[in-house]
Image 1 (cartoon, rainbow, N blue to C red):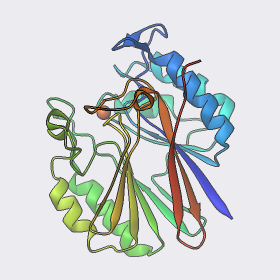
Image 2: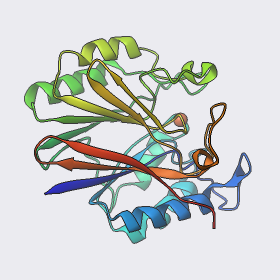
Image 3: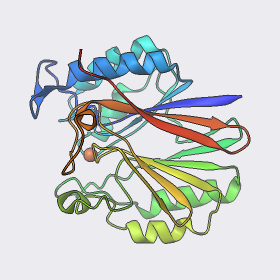
Amino acid sequence: MVLKIAQITDTHLFADRKTAMRGLVTWDSLGTVVAEVQAWNPDILLLTGDLAHRGEPQAYQHLIERIAPLHLPTYYIPGNHDELDILNQQFQNSPFLGDKVLQRQGWQVLLLDSTLATAQSGEGYLSEAQLEALEQSLTACSKPTVLVLHHHPVPMGIDWLDTIGVQNNQAFLDYLTRFPQVKLVLFGHVHLEFEEQYQGIQFYGTPSTCKQVLRDGASEQEAYPGFRGLRLFEDGTYQTEVIRSYPR
Ligand SMILES: [Fe+2]
């Protein structure tokens, strides 16, 4: 048996569906990604922040409309662009589930809120409350674990981007060394595909469903919208891949 999780991130929707962000209409590009998610046929959907660019209620309604055809149990965390109160209000009903701790298929999946109310330019932070909740979950359950947050807790090697990651990332990384069951960490925010191992944990950045951040020398394909697929197997192993939607 396998649990298939799709991670959709940084949809940056607007109240007006026709609004473009850096030249791309985010409603349209999300539609192409949702079609790919549907074809991939996951069991669960994770939405990992920056769902609405300006936090408008209508933007969240547009997101609900876009993902409705998937009929998937949907879990979510906010990003720096979201308005948490509005998001929570809009996501009260099916298919949304408010749980931040999931135990399925011999695995534990923990969703963390890395947003910082006083952020100046979109940077993140893991509060004492978030770390305490994490500690409780990891102490209570030693199953292989996936951590999910919006901001990147490891450097991307891109100067401006690395000023807006998790500000207390070193404390977080040191803390994780106490919990060897943590196998992988998923994040969004960076708008690019990323993979790196640090202290025995795999860190995965997932492209946005809209505009990407391109490194020097990036391929044409790296500019395309995408999502991450993650397969969790009962024996504690996993596979993950980024699936892009290609322009038609
Ligand atoms: Fe973000």
